[in-house]
Length: 467
Image (cartoon, rainbow, N blue to C red; front, side):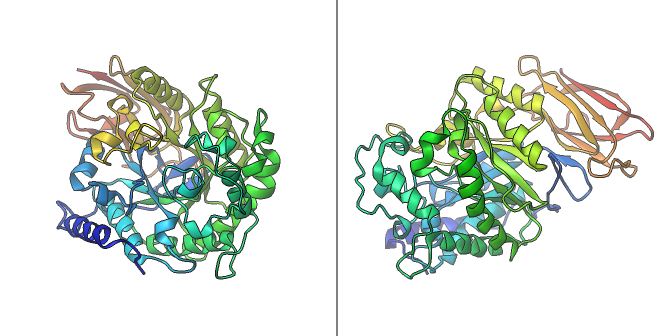
């Protein structure tokens, strides 16, 4: 059932039809990615590293194609080394009334996922919210009106997102009622509705190519408990409230999709550097932790806390948001830091912000991707990565890896390919390669350097220099 205004419906249908024109090429084959300890691996057992961007369109009708995203933008992202997008949707639009799903809306999100897949870009399907609903101080309504219960608590003071979290009684009471599973108008708890909604959405994406997985909830807020989260984090909230809630969602998704990675999130307070206590909610063997890095103070606190917690839980950790700035030096420092930790990441571009004084810009390729984050990196390693590093000033890149599988320690078959992304925008005059322990099998100056390890050679060392 679709409950949009006539104007929004017409706009959405026009954009959808334009987006469904014949693609330039058939969608390339892709294997599903799975978690192997701290790594993501593909069907060959190669380690896959993600460099991506976020795309969450926060204006009605809440899907990126309505804001202008299309095939040219996907091509632009791929040409600049982006191999994943965190693709957000709004619960408000997916379930406009309790138990009533808008399959037209979900199809529009899927249409964008299909366009990205045509260019070999994985989608992390993300249920996105920021401060719940506009009626309680959010800048947009990610979660539905019918799930918002304030019990008469006042909205004021309302300084806007994100400060509204800390001062608005209505905001905090709404989260408390959500976690308490307050009954909606149909008598079913709002938490139960949320899990059922995710089951419905995951059924649509379960068999699509280039689906990275599901991000269960963006930046969950602790509600009234937030003062207990500073400065030592939220061990009680994350273990006793947040983990059981996300376990319900994980179990619901697993009823319809047994293969994609389930990415759970800790409290939003971790975004700013509080310690991360979040467990794997169900112990699912194919799970990941989605965490964000807007750290203040120690630059490496967020990535270290998130990565270390993921390692302790035996899951893959991924920085699914960072940035929200055009500070080239800061973005470069963070890119270097993530390389040192060998973690995957997805940029939150400043253009995606919708905060007081900063309306969201159209979700075009250049808007979503800052040139400062374009860097050489190993997209697929037929082995176990030991180290990689990129110098943005000189274009020098080095990679060391063992030619053994991370899941078994066994050698790869002859001919297994390691792929290194070398976008032309950072190597405009080409590049030179020095390799020890492997052979280059790609064309000279190809934007994807391909290597096959020599039998018995370990480790493999790759050095790329800008020509």
